Image 1 (cartoon, helix red, strand yellow):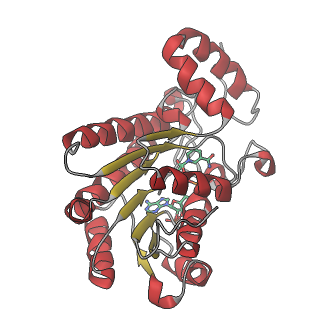
Image 2 (spheres, helix red, strand yellow; image 1 turned 135 degrees about the vertical axis):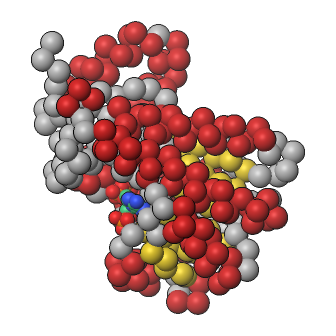
Length: 275
Ligand SMILES: NC(=O)c1ccc[n+]([C@@H]2O[C@H](COP(=O)([O-])OP(=O)(O)OC[C@H]3O[C@@H](n4cnc5c(N)ncnc54)[C@H](OP(=O)(O)O)[C@@H]3O)[C@@H](O)[C@H]2O)c1
């Protein structure tokens, strides 16, 4: 990616920076001259990865479970105390699932909402005063599942639709304040997300039904994210399939429901309904 200097000395917080899209984004922002705050639950892993993001004086690692409001408040406090300002908050930490709602322990759906939706709300609430001061940007990493439904992901879809609604409303509230609000929806991306996805009883799937090597790379997604931020875009949907699904779903919802059912059925390891 061409370095235009846009990210130079910007203070950027990335949640879920210990893996996948978050880690690739943290590395890219670091390479473009930003101060990077890496947040996730596995602090030791973050500290191990930090040298690949930025020199010690330009990177901060913070243990944070985004489902905890107190952790998110502490994250934002640590970032502002260390670097004196906050320019960009990337709400990327996230969790997926694989189970039909009829089989689902409701604690799974609650966990998905707590991490994906409330995690975004918690961090955004704490960071907003700093972002308004810097006329900065807040991003929600959602998914194509935040535009169009996917079977066996009712909680995931709910949480991603909710993040989109929340951020779209926030954008309008701050239309005149210079706050940038980006809804960013990757398509299938190679990462640990499917291994960590929760099954009906809340245990991790521990496997992926997809050929991860054939998916978009987390690094390519990070470049798209950086470009969207630089152009202060409001909404980005990635991959041809993702763009097509989001667009056509708005026009022909019943057709997309049937196509989605067949497409996901081909994944094999995803539970299927009997009828
Ligand atoms: N990969 C895809 O195909 C895809 C497609 C569309 C959207 N997305 C979205 O992209 C985002 C990143 O996912 P990924 O694909 O990069 O998955 P990933 O490799 O599994 O990374 C998820 C990250 O989130 C962190 N995390 C999970 N629960 C957390 C919590 N409670 N508090 C703080 N951090 C937490 C994990 O770190 P710790 O375990 O250390 O906390 C990890 O760093 C997610 O929001 C996901 O929904 C992914």
